[in-house]
Each structure stands twice: as structure tokens, then as C-alpha cells.
Image (cartoon, rainbow, N blue to C red; front, side):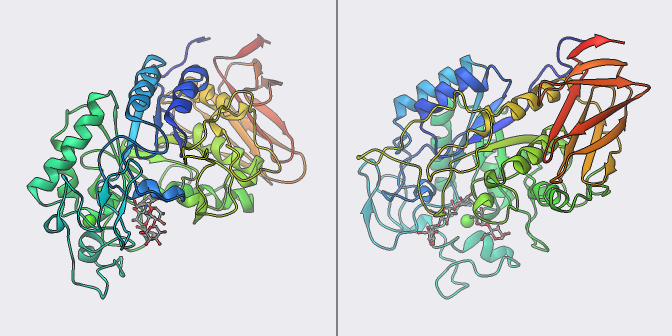
Length: 454
Ligand code: ARE
Ligand code: CA
């Protein structure tokens, strides 16, 4: 029986939304590294408008690495400490646009700006003014031209076809690489042509990891596949398919098992249950759903499609509300030490700490042992469902409000196994494993954790 994981390279990432650099460094050392997370996605690291909402981060004023999440030195220290803990840092790169404020102002670090004037960086001629809609805003996502040359919610849209604009962006990304980041989430990639994004990232070292945010929209002409040519992409269809069975209990769906329409090829897909936009929008299952959210994450982490990124943010009742700050507006640090799962009632601003939850950590262990073994056809019994990763592990969930039992045929050797979720003993005998599951329960066993043979 193998006692070391099948996959030498851990692949799971975590998005630590609006967490300060000093806290991310600590999480890398105490939680992410030890539990086998491969990478962390940070919020944007460059100077932004001075406003309290979290989305101030998405309105760049300059490429100075000074934000309410920390200073340049703190960012550099975080990258070094995460790297030493075996965790790559992926920075959120907001390069499609600058600010969306009509009035002039000063950024977080004091840099003055106007809507289309950013001293030392860009002047009015560096921006698209599409002239296709009344206020130059995107109105029709069915129009490629509008989406890529008009403004996303009034955000001054950089002319990324311009060599000088590209050069300025590349210099910013190179600065981050010089501090040791492994790659970038390309924010709003859909709003730049694939050609423009490719030209920009093509100027960076070949091993730079690129993950483009291109939200798949029903029938829209711009699709993630265009951006999968030169990097990875977030596959939004995955979360959309994952959620409905959690409500209905009907899992036997060919779209979940095998053939996946509207999904980019697995090798280039980053999958997630939710992210900072979808938890405030389209996602049906979020931290608010407690155990159901655990189930969604467990199914994703057990799956053989794509590279998962776990989302870890903070509780809110106002969708615009930023993370809690000190009197100077700096976001307060937070530690996830000792957080073992979701709680019933969150106060606004509480960190969810999803990456520290026992079940998530257990599923990372499962995933490491599952390696690249294929996902076998599942067994759907009432509100319970489970499947095997061939010869490597078995996972089961119960989305119902009553206890449930599901029997899953398995090729795992007969014996007793430690359930990585509950710590209970689960028995494989006669080529099957019978899981007795709590209401909204999860169970998972893998070949690396037998407790006894039979
Ligand atoms: C804020 C205010 C606006 C104001 C603007 C300028 O909310 O009212 O006009 O500032 O002052 C985030 C927030 C926005 C915020 C923005 C800037 O979500 O509310 O605007 O920051 O501060 C599209 C894009 C996709 C984008 C989503 C939000 O295609 O790239 O919209 N996602 C990324 C980030 C966001 C961020 C931005 C981009 C901007 O993840 O957090 O915005 O940097 C269909 C389409 C999608 C489309 C979606 C929503 O599904 O298929 O492509 O997503 O509709 O419109
Ligand atoms: Ca654009």
C-alpha cells in the first residue's frame, strides 16, 4: 500500500480575498504549506483609489505596490515566505483598465489622477473611447467590439493594442516577477483581445503562470477557449454544474461524469465553487450554506477535472463592504489558526478561513493520493452520492436532512481506512464500501490511510 501521495506535484490553490500580505505570509507558513496547497491568489497588489469598498482594489491608480493590504516590502516578504513554505504566489493583475471615477482624486499612496490621466504612466491617448454607446460603457456582451473597446462599468479602458501601453503593463508585471511571484490572474481578460493578452504575457519569461478571467456567458462571442491557447482559464461552467445536484439530490448527470460540454480541456481549467464576484452574484452555494458548501468543495477536490482553487473570504451583509480596517484604512490582519469548519452565524467581516477547515484539508490529502486516477461512474442513492477515483480513493456525500447510506463498489484493497473528513473508520469488504452518512455529511477514504487489513 502506498504511503506517499501519487501526485508528486500538489495542484490546489486558494484565493485569499482581501487578506493583508503579512497575514498571507503567516497562512503560508502555518496552514497552506503544511497542508499541501500549491499556490495562493492574492488581491491586486498595486495602488488603487482611496475608497472603502473592497472593489477599490480593482481601480488602479499607479503600479506602485502600496495598497491597504500592505506595502511593497510586506508584499516582497510574503512572496519569499510563501515560496519557502512551498506555496507559489499568483498576483491579481488589473491591466485592462485604470479608474472609473469621474472626479479627479488621489490614490491610496497619494498619487494624483484623473479619469484618463495617470502621471508618469498613461495619458488620454492611451485609452479606448469606443464611441459605440452613449457613455462609452459596454452595453451588449454579444458585441465583441463593445466588450473589448468600450468601458467595463466606466473603468478607463486601456488601449492594449498600443505598443507603449503594452510596454508599461509588461514593466509592471516584470516588477512583480522580480519579487518572486509565479504568475498572474489576468483580471477582466475578456475585455482585452486574446491577441493583446498573448502579446503582453508573451513578453514575460516562459514559466510565468497565466490564468485568465473570462466569464463564460451563454451565447457570447468571446469564449475562454481563445485565452486557453496561451495559459489557463477559470472555467465558470464548472461551478454552475456543481451546484444544482446539491439542492436536488440528483447527481446522475452525464455532464458531471465524463463528457463535459462547455468546459475547456481539463489541463487548462481552473475550477472553483465560488469566487469574490460569484459569492456576491450567481453562486447558489457559498460560505453561508455551511455544510453544503463543504460538500461542494469536497466534490470539487475529489474530481478529476481541472485545477481547483478554494475560495476564502470574509462574511458580509453589504456586498460592497470592504474587509475590516484600522483607523488608517489598512485592512486588519487575521489568522485562521484553530478554525476547523463553517459556523452558523458569522459577524460581518469574520474571515471564513475555508482553507483551514478540517474537511478541506482532508480532501487535499485525498486528492494527493488520488493523483491522476480517473473518476469512475458514481452511485446515486436518494440524497447520497459517491464515486471512486480508480483504485485510489472513494468519496461520498449526503445532501439530505436525514442520515443516509450509500454503497459504492470499489477496487480498493479490503481493509479498514481512516475517513479523512471525520476520522472515523470505514471498511472496504467484498469489493464495496458502505458509507453511513450524517445529514449534510461527507466521507472520504484513500489508499494512503489504511488502518488495518482484513
Ligand atoms: C465599481 C462599481 C461600479 C462603478 C465602477 C467604477 O460597482 O458601479 O461603475 O466601480 O467606478 C469589481 C466590482 C465592480 C466594481 C469594479 C471596479 O465587481 O462592481 O465597479 O471592481 O471597482 C464582467 C467582466 C468581469 C468582471 C465582472 C465583475 O467580464 O471581468 O464583470 N470581473 C472582474 C473582477 C471584479 C472587478 C472587475 C473585473 C473590474 O473579478 O471583481 O469588478 O476590475 C455577464 C458577462 C460577464 C460579466 C458579468 C457581469 O455574466 O458574461 O463577462 O462580467 O455579466 O457584468
Ligand atoms: Ca479593454
